[in-house]
Length: 123
Image (cartoon, rainbow, N blue to C red; front, side, top):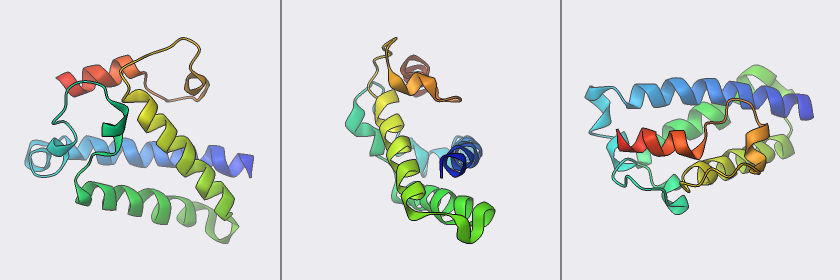
């Protein structure tokens, strides 16, 4: 189950990066992703403040396409819930605006810091 979780985190990160990159395209940004960037300061509750179409796409890509496509029937429901909890905690964490050196999220590879994410919201 741990190997599946690591694999799913890599798949989810890959899918999230390219879908998020696409949401920053000028033709799409102002209609969908701009809602998430309305606030330029770090507040953790705003981590989940997204347009409904963005939430739907992330859900379909990550939970319905990502895991089941690559792992098929071997994907355990507990693994899916663990991935969801880790990603939600990470999302809330890097929207706080605080980048603590002792943060347990820093042990997870490919996790951006709160400082970088704050910069992302200000440019």
